[in-house]
Length: 477
Image 1 (cartoon, one colour):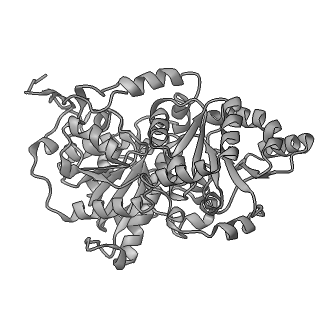
Image 2 (cartoon, helix red, strand yellow; image 1 turned 90 degrees about the horizontal axis):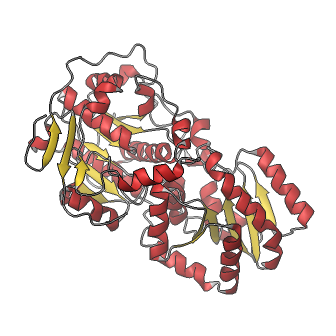
Image 3 (cartoon, one colour; image 1 turned 135 degrees about the horizontal axis):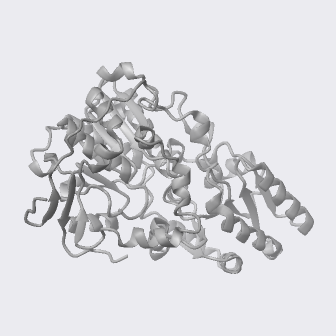
């Protein structure tokens, strides 16, 4: 191991060359429409374009291509990647939106799941269960203490050489204009592929929560597109230069950039115009994280009689059994002020028609609520990045946080007695509301792709593993 000033670098590269993938499986993959729409049971056909991003074939590798890469660990990273890809296609097709940024007229956009390129096929849903099931306190400790102090991770070829040589080969053939990454694994694999192939395309990192994990490849990323100034403050002590930080917001689907008429939305979904609409998002692609969430809602239902000015809407998503259970409960309890919906077409409009949303503190969920101007009650104990999301939103006064059914009933009663709280949360949430984040990220990626490659030797030098010493952390988790 070669030691350098302020670094702990392992420069000895593996000798073997990456193997070439056989066939096109996983190389130019697009997420099927039903897969995109099932992410959180909050998508809808009108949220996605007729042509899904990433629909190119391997034979189109000669076209100028931007790769948008995620990891299918949960649904948020994929949803963010699709939002950025759709924004890139929008800029390609509508020059008036480019704001002077060059964009090839024949731009090809690939949306890829990095796990599809693994030497061993990994199940992202099972990986997600590691931090949503019984092991979540361990995950919480790992997330809060891994490479968040002075010793930091910069990036290297380790993950690419050991686990993802097929992606390196795809990069070698495609020669992308840029790679945009919405997950740390994707970002590290992209950095490794660039080092191994010797190409100079920019890498744009897009964290999808309100803090940056310690495993992002800090020194080898051309740009971090972050949600707010607090995240920028985390990156500066990690020696990420100011010009490589852009405060764009977290990318949400195109439907969340639109403005909706509240009265028309309520009429469409058959909701009362003269009540406070409280929307509970209880449907999800992965049911495990929602077990306790649903239990708390069940325990809250008998107390709904208290809130005469409130109408509760519960979205059960594609879970018909859970929806039937809720309807039975409401009927047995004689609750007149509740509506149970299954899979919803036009979730952005439903959120905009609501006065308050009860939800889990996932990065994409809370971002969509902010874009829809829907104040939140965040329900459940939060771990890892979700804990940071809770702290960010509650510290700004943009949301309330409760962990039990008793606290949920208390919070709803507090809102019922003090309706101005909702308006206050809406005002405070405007500090984080950035509905055009996907467009801004797409512009930044194209701008970097058109610029001269970086001459910073540190960003192009090969490292198998690259650790370094940073400054005093801005935030202690």
